[in-house]
Length: 146
Image (cartoon, rainbow, N blue to C red; front, side, top):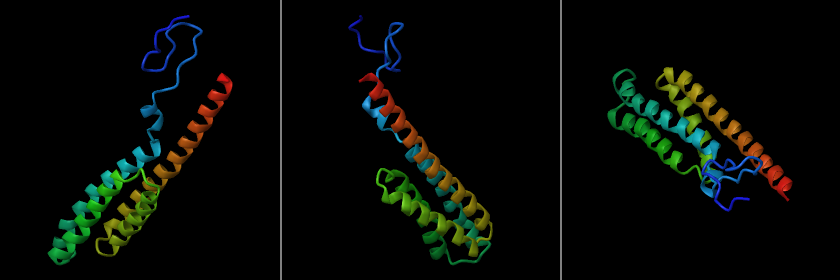
């Protein structure tokens, strides 16, 4: 049997050899966190772009529009970086409510907010499912290995 380390992809170097588990850093990557961060990052762009719309079309005072539009965009970006903490996912749902609520000022945000809320919920729920299935698969693999 070879004493060399398995290749980085975790594939066996020789036929019949069991693949090694992935490195710790790869095993800790969260698909839920990645998908939710992507949704929040794209939503930050959308919310930031509501600022000029609020000023020009909805006649919202400039200071109010900047604090709401850019404030929500900054909150999205900060939350995208804080998704290692479980509370940040709850805060993400609160941002979705605020985005839909922005529809009372900019009616298009009812639709865009609903779309982002659906994307957020899908990313959160699907990410949880992937993490559960990944954990179950690793548990089965480790039990099989003894």
